[in-house]
Image (cartoon, rainbow, N blue to C red; front, side, top):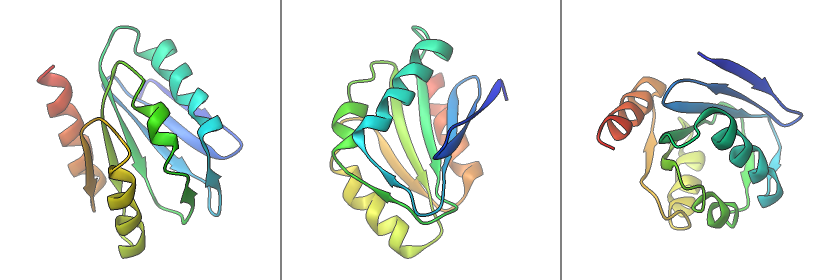
Length: 123
């Protein structure tokens, strides 16, 4: 891990080819929080492709319109949701419709990391 970033609503761990976010319990994720992803892309992945992995350990809600902005992050090449709860997986299926990038849903974090690494290596 390169760096662990803590915010009021989440923790984001930055690695060489991907980031892993863990959003706090009960939070409602809105498009204004997307600025953090843009800053991470600019600070840690300048002209370098990366994948965003959200590890949904806690229950929280997402405004799907956030993905319209997320799609504009040029060097973001993929998005993964890791969730065990059926409701979280179902929500991710709906969210997937709003992102214009590869988007996969996993039950296991290691599988999401392998997918992220393969996406980056194929760039």
